[in-house]
Image (cartoon, rainbow over all chains, first blue to last red; front, side, top):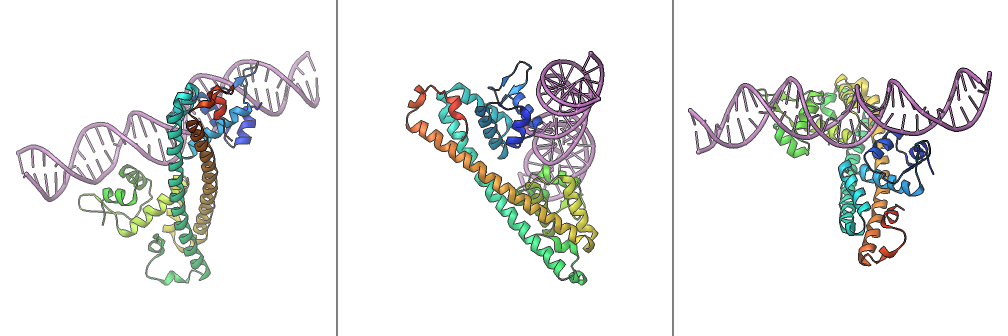
Amino acid sequence: MYTIKEVAEKMDVSEHTLRFWAKSGFFPFVKRDQNNIRQFSEDDLGWVKIVKCLRSVGTENKAIKRYIDLCIIGDSTIPERYGIIQATKLKAEEQMKELQKQLELLNYKEKFYQNLIKNNLKDSWNPMNNIQLEKAL
Amino acid sequence: MYTIKEVAEKMDVSEHTLRFWAKSGFFPFVKRDQNNIRQFSEDDLGWVKIVKCLRSVGTENKAIKRYIDLCIIGDSTIPERYGIIQATKLKAEEQMKELQKQLELLNYKEKFYQNLIKNNLKDSWNPMNNIQLEKAL
DNA sequence: ATTTACCTGAGAGTGGCTCTAAACTATAAA
DNA sequence: TTTATAGTTTAGAGCCACTCTCAGGTAAAT
């Protein structure tokens, strides 16, 4: 059993966010002790994990709640849940590609500045000012 | 020269967002025509590109404005700009790793549901109910 | 001349946190 | 035994980055 603080550390999600998610109905199975303190079980960590995963690819909280609710409803919702996971995977893959593209731009920019620094900025005589030089690719 | 609508399409950023970014001072060089309509030059697209890039890895708008301002100040700010690009690259690489991890979880979940569907849900006799089965990895 | 298709800025609304405040234990030190 | 410290709780305010609505302007096409 974990307190919210322990979960926050273990799962790398802030306590605030965990409470916000809890209030949003993302962890319907978290028990409380006699002092009303949340006690996250090992199973509950699995829920934190999937919520974090869905969030990390930009799934809206309403859609996450839907997924949780489907889980609670039971077996009859397995096809829909499967669809959600597949769609999420596609989204994640697209995001990978997009990130890759942005990384290429950053690499280009990095080299651009390295050049400028290596040449001790002696391109600054260039009639194209640095603002124009800044333009990407 | 491009209207804001054309830029929106070409760069895959909404017109609203472009106006918001413009108001935030991200495109200080965009000219207007006689009717006060923005005319984005090819160079301006480069600025859209780098702003989009910085945003896509979660750089705050205040920090983006800082980067733009550094570019305007000129050569003396090249080392700081280089540092920003490097830090941004690191962030992007971390995000790639994180996405990779989340993709692994999604793959696990996908197989989990495929199994359930293939076996025609005949695991449902299992005393562990589907909620517990849902728990990740 | 009016419809259509753009554009403009101002400002309200939204989503998802993020933080503050006030109240309530529980343990530990003085 | 009082007090301090550290943890928890909720409600609710604040923040950021959009996102959208609206009222109004211009210009070409019918």
